[in-house]
Length: 351
Image 1: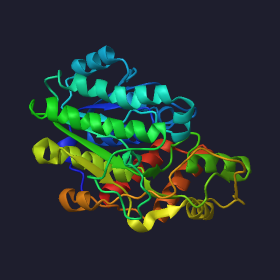
Image 2: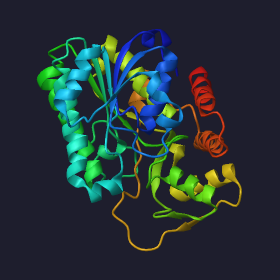
Image 3: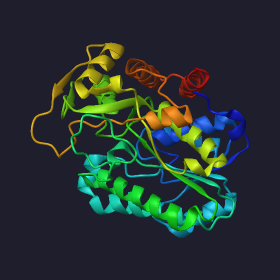
Image 4: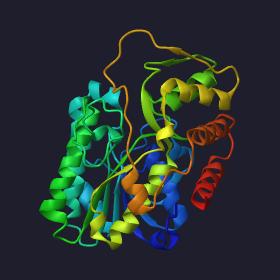
């Protein structure tokens, strides 16, 4: 897998959601590639956060703003004249969407619509990548991986809002952006893991909090199968897609960026492997009680990205968990997080 460093060097990029987990890694990666990045996001969603721990506000033109505020976001875009837009901002949690469905739709659907509408009025923009999720597909319980042409859907408000966002992308592509010479594609990734994620109700950060406290991790659904992948895998895919789309409008489609089929593993297997990396008597138990609906099995078929983009997963699940544990160990021991993060990016991009 090759990310074209020459393409990104000096490239003007508008990145939403840059203070989040994936956004922080992408901010650092773009800085290392030499891009001229403008970030637009709410403040970091967790405390601690990777964005603050690494001092990433100095790595880009840092704007605090809400994607539900069309006028402010458009003004930030116009002020920096981006060529490439990478849209990662979202309400990213299934359980939080049950607590606040209106806010989830407002951010994930209408926030995306706002961004798309702003893009059609900013003359410098040529390439737009909208990041959604593997959960945008209507989950019918099939055992094969979902392909890009499968029906959009989603049971819970989070998943459904992302399916709606995909429909909005399609409508804006056909109605406005294609005719304006702007390439618009969507990217759908699986459950990403890696150092720097401190969100609640996510498996690895919940595990790290429990392990650091000497407590047992409680797991809601140990048998649930998910397409686990290290955060750098889809981020590289987004960059490769943007490169190809910038040169060729034929890439203005939806794309899956998931792990190898062998790495679509049950939650309990993931945690058992992470415990092996962590040590120190780390342990888990099944959480008692009832929990909101979550799909039992969800996998992606990434053959299209493999064949047409030349993108493919580079890290096994065990390697992804080892890198995650290494990063969190460094954080727990007050080590140099900038150095370890850059080292992991360099190793990945050089592989």
